[in-house]
Length: 140
Image 1 (cartoon, rainbow, N blue to C red):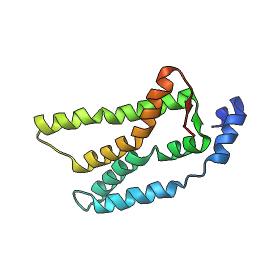
Image 2: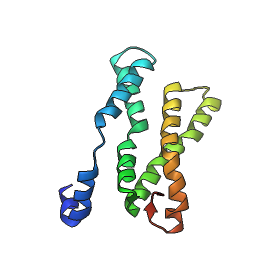
Image 3: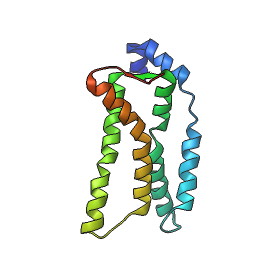
Image 4: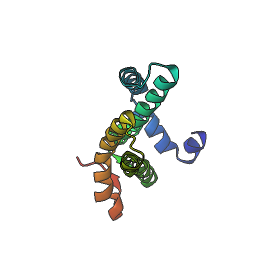
């Protein structure tokens, strides 16, 4: 972060002043979901479930900041796109595991669907703007 502040102080300061997302909401959501949806009430299962739910919404603060700034630089847009693509690639894995291993992880599946849904709006803008060589700007 110090390097970012030195190299591009205007952009860094702009991000810091506009970043007002309360991380505690993500943490509270993940705790609540882990307490409601787990396979066994044990420390290991609760922490695993917590991590799955937290991962599913972890990009929300970044998307919130992009929405406030109304734009994202190319590197950030490509990075978020690759994060979302990584999650979308889980879907063939779930299908494979269901049919070949006869295994269905409900928590992973529904958290993954949530995460994919969160990324869907970003994907739409990414494909209509960035993939065409335009800047990532949110519509007004």
